[in-house]
Image (cartoon, rainbow, N blue to C red; front, side, top):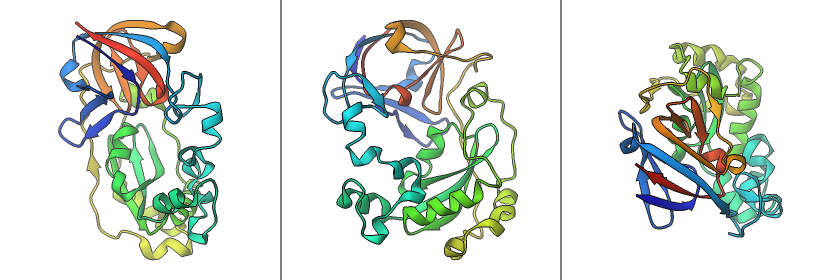
Amino acid sequence: MTYEGVLTKMETEYAKPIQYYLVFDSDFLNMNQLLNKTLNIKFIKYQCLNCGLDKKIYRQGYCKSCFFEVPQAADWIMKPELSKAHLDEEDRDLAFEKRVQLQPHIVYLANSGKVKVGVTRKGQVPTRWIDQGAHEAIEVVEVPNRYLAGITEVALKDHVSDKTNWRTMLKNEVEDEDLVEWKNKLKAYIPEEAKAYFIDSNPETEMDFPVLQYPTKPKSLNIEKMLEYTGVLKGVKGQYLIFEDDTVFNIRGNEGMYVSISIS
């Protein structure tokens, strides 16, 4: 069977193990069902996630012109502390910014190799943790807007990392951590504006990923350069496909690439 379409972030379902779905316009693939099968991936063209044109992808699935225009790629996406919708100030599209920024946000701790702090909309829990390949995670504060989440993250990352090491995550070099203890230890560093939103009593959430074989020396597949790759799928973790020969393919990192996938 052969499927084709533009790559976008895999959809996920919190289960044991996590269920992964690669969604195209007219088809979808349950990636869990493809473990131990041979996949052939071919790069066909670009398809910007905004304009839909066959233009080289710049970042986050957008061509260069769209990346600097669409609100989905504005600086506050990656740096939530730059959010201004709560001040009624527009960046690129105030209606969009209000819709996204002025809703409950979570500052969390996640362990995908070592403990890190992050921000996500409440509605994206636990999806955000799954996308990062976190073994375990816990909410620290629930605030009413993105700005408060952003300044809390900035304050906490002076004391804990805000990055995920993708190689460590994929090799599954993860030790269990007591995230409740971490959360309580970091409570003192939460900014005054967000202290009232601290979550006093909540358990860790654990994630179980569908992986039969972890890579020992993961090497990233550049499908834009190689044009074609064939390998046996051995697992899915974060937004990565893991193959038998230690090749890993970051689906989210290749959004906007139009590909064909053949299964045998």
